[in-house]
Image (tube, rainbow, N blue to C red; front, side, top):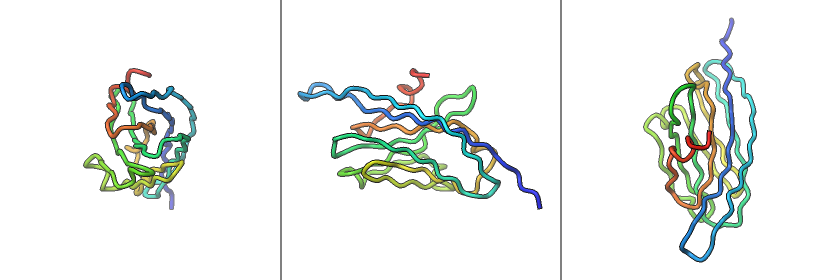
Length: 139
């Protein structure tokens, strides 16, 4: 029995948000890691992203980008003191799941298909709002 093999390209971006007007600001720190993850049809893959910050409330985001298309929002999830927050795209509930910890987040894609081949972005913000347009500008 032969199984198709799909290549998922992963490009992780970690961003710290910048908050102004509250007496403090945070420097933007970028860390880039490019990894290729290969999975077989109908299997599951997990993409990991680690982060480091002193803030007690953080929001973690997952996006994906297909060639010649705009960034596609997948999920935002609170971590640490914001751990009860979650907002996801409609398609997320079908085959995606996510976990977030004190210094990591992960995205699991089950039932892998060819359409899952994309560049996946992980981002961190101090607010629950992070526009995909902000990420598109940095490409």
